[in-house]
Every structure is written in C-alpha cells, then in structure tokens.
Length: 409
Length: 218
Image 1 (cartoon, chains in turn brown, yellow):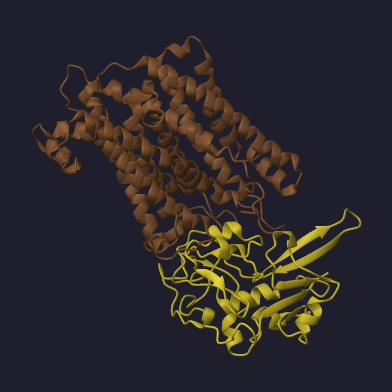
Image 2 (spheres, one colour; image 1 turned 90 degrees about the vertical axis):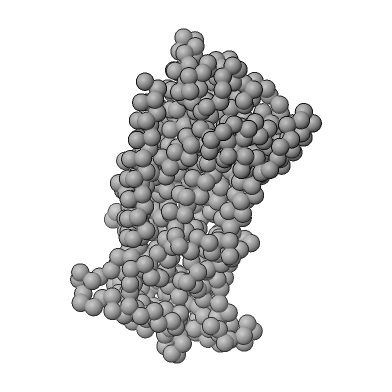
C-alpha cells in the first residue's frame, strides 16, 4: 500500500514536471507573448509565485532558528526540514523570476552589472549570501549523521560520505562545535532573512512611489512569511512521518498549530490595516485598487482564496476544540493556510497593476494563461521532487530519534 | 554616444501647448511610423480627459511621450544599469543589456515604458519585419524572433536617430496645430526655455520629484 502510494506520487510529479517542461520550452521559444501580461499589467503569476516562495523560504528559515538559535527543543524534529525547505523555496523563487525575464539567457547580467540604487540588484545578492548560510547550516546540522550514514554500504552511504566533506569526527566536542556554529550562522541569518531577503522582496514593491497602494512602510511582511513557513512545515512533517510509517509527534504538531493560529490572526489584523490605510487616504487611485481587490472580476481571489480558504477555514479548524485534536484536520488547515498565502501574494501583485497609472491610459486585465499555470505547476513539482529525493538520501530526521530502526528512508 | 560635454552641449527638452492640441493623434501615428514600433508598443499616446459635469463639459488632450526625467525612477531601479541618462538629457535603454525584468515599467509614473512582447504587423503589412528604425543610431537589421529589442523594455527617446541627422522628433514635425516645441533647455534664449519659464508651464505628477524634461502649457 505504502509503496504503491509512493510510486503514484513519483508518477504524478513526473507528469507535472513533463507538462511544466513543455510549457517552459514554449516560453523560451515564443517569449513573453505566451503570457497574458500586458503593458498595463507587466507583472503577473510568475512574480506572485516568486514572492510567495521567497516568503516561504524566510518563514521556514525563521522557524529553523527557533530550534538552532533559540533552542526551543519542542520543535527539534523539524529543524533540518525547515532548513531544507528554506533552501529549496529560495531556489524555486529564483527559477520563477528567471522564467519571468524577457531575456532569460541574460539573467547572469544581474551579477555582471550592479546598479547600487536598485533594490532588485541588492536583493539577488542577499539571496546568494542567504543560501550560502542555509547550506552551511544544513551541513552542520547533519554532519554527524552523515558520517554515521557513510559507514553503511551502497550508493547512499557513498553519497553521505561525499556530503560529509571528509569530516569523520563523531566526538561529543565536535557535536558541541556544530551546535555553536548553527547558533552563530542562524543568528547572522535572522537579520539577513528578515531585512535582506524577505523584507527586501517586499520593499521591491514598497519603494515603487508611483504605485501608491504598494508605497507604504508597513507590509505585514514577516508575519505572512511565518504563516506560510509554519503551515507548510507542519503539513510536510505530518505527511512525511505518516508515509515513512512512524509515530507523529502530536504534541509538537499541536504546538505548531497554536503558533499558526496566532500568526494567522496577527496577519489578518495587519492585512486589514493595510487595506484600511489605503482606503482612509481617499485617494482615487487607492480606492480604485481596493475596489479591484474586494469588488471586481478578480475578487474571488481575495474573498475565496485569501480570506475563506486561507483564513476562515483554517482558523475554524484550529479553534474548534474537536477538530483541533485531529492531526488530519490540523494538517488540512495548514495546507489551506499555505494556499491562502499564495492568494495574498497574487492579490498584492495583480490588482495594483490593473488600475491605470496615469488617467487616460487603458485599464489592465490579467488572468494567467494555461502556459503560465502549467510552467508554475511544473516548477513546484520539480521542487517537490527534489524535496522527496532529499528526505530519502539525507538524514533530515535525526538518526538518534529513529529509535530501534535502521535508517533506510 | 554623446559627443556633447556636460557643460556646453544641448540638453533637449520638449514643450507641449495643451491649448493648441486638438487630440488628432497624428503624433502617435507619426511616432509609430518613424520608430516602427510593434503592436502594443506606442512611445507616444494622447490621453483624453473629460472634465466638468454635464452640460458644462470640456475635453483635455494630453500627449504623453517619455518625459526624459532628470531624476528618473526607471534608472534608479534598473538592476543592471541598462537604462541611463545621456549627457544630452535623453534617458536611453541599452537593448543589449536589458534583461526584460520590467521593474522600470512598474516604477515609471507616466506609463511611458512598453515591453516588446514580440508581436508584429506581418499579417497587416507586407515586409513589416524587413527593417527596423535605427533607434539610438544603431541599425539592427530585420526584426527577428528572440532578437533584441524583442523581450526588452522600450520607450520614446526623442527620436535620437533623427536628432543625429539634425531633424526634430517625428511628433514635433508632424503636429498639425504646432503644439509641440523642441529645443535646448540649456540655452536660455531658445524657444523651449522661454516657454518653460511661462506661468502656464507645468509638468505631470510634479510631486513624484522626477523632474521631467517634457513641459506642458496649460
């Protein structure tokens, strides 16, 4: 049963990646004409996905610091997973933004030339620093377990040996040193993640003085990312543990669910203020954008995805004393919350670009094309495949935790 | 490009007299013909605004080229410095460097920037792709799939290639009401400098602090 389930999972991922690959080839050949983007709405789904994954990465990373920096041991089981998700998410974000370029083959220009006044230019450099820190952290968190895995036989052991980078020290002191490194790297990573990576991505749009709806100093940046990070890691932990056939740590899941509920509530409050401040200004452009968000052809994405799927249903589950006890229900709430945050990202990017920037210019209208959806789903499937592969070959779960069982993925 | 040194060369500017503009759109047409811009790309448009309430209504036409701002937000945000100010006041785009991220389009307060999606008029016109305008004085030959400026952001550059030949921008030359003036804003005796000093002069979205080089007369 479990094996056939895993096979089906690989099958689905393969099909989605094939579809996505086809769509990406189409984009490479035909260019941006295959999108529904226009000169009124020059950014669309790919940018929304990009911001979503940057947020997811920052949120996962901040969650990992609870384990490695703040030593909240109750979350230890998801520490390495959080780092892995953070790394993969930021890489997916990179794929999305490269796909979004009109001249994909020139993306390297962004490193060759550096406009000091461009937030975007700073942003990509922060990503590099950030990914380096995350990779180093993941290494130190797994080092001893990699060495232990390398003692076995087969290609996985050889792979682990390669990843251990020649280290063979299994002593207690070296373990302490790893922990110290993790604490230092995590502490450096926190401001980089909040201000450089996630804050920076929010600021991309917040500095757009011409787009009054984005031009604000308070975007509920970090909280939104914490909602998606916490929710996704919860869901991944439960699904992963159940598939491997181990016991789910219910106490930890409950505790994460509590965190998620708090993040969700705070996020909703800040999002309300975001709209309220815009509406209160009574500027006609702001009002037109808010009307586009809450009362236009695109509003299903706000009321349906962002509010109903992303907030109301998850909060109902998390606050219902009966449903809260069920791991399945809580996992469902987490998955819905992640989808809701995706809606948040779309609602940040697109409505602000529907209203014309100068009176008399045409209004925008944007719904992603099938090619845009297919390529996006393909990229996500690619991320999930790498994730599945990684949890199979890497000691993402601490070997010590796997009491009385050999590690065979 | 620029042989003009910062201190003594011309700094181009444009003055548009809204009282003389009849909203005929011939500037838009001549611009499209001169720059051979593809469908969806229009360096110049005429925005028409209706003012007042019935029966006291009037129409105001505002032609909108690129403002060639002195403090351009597009230049500020471009990650790869593919768009920059020339000494002669024109904001240029390097089609061979631009990566097509469209961040400049997001930041232009005037919607003056257009992405070249790669569409063309080959269905409507024989040989539409055979030749391109020598924008910035560079002959790019035929318009071909995947070749710049397809996939780049484009905009008005005061017909740079015409200025090189000593001609005015196409929209200025063609304007039926003579509503457009073009000249050196560095030269206090030029017509544009004198008109720019008129009490009727204003610029679009002054509050943005972009300091446009296109000045309107009320």
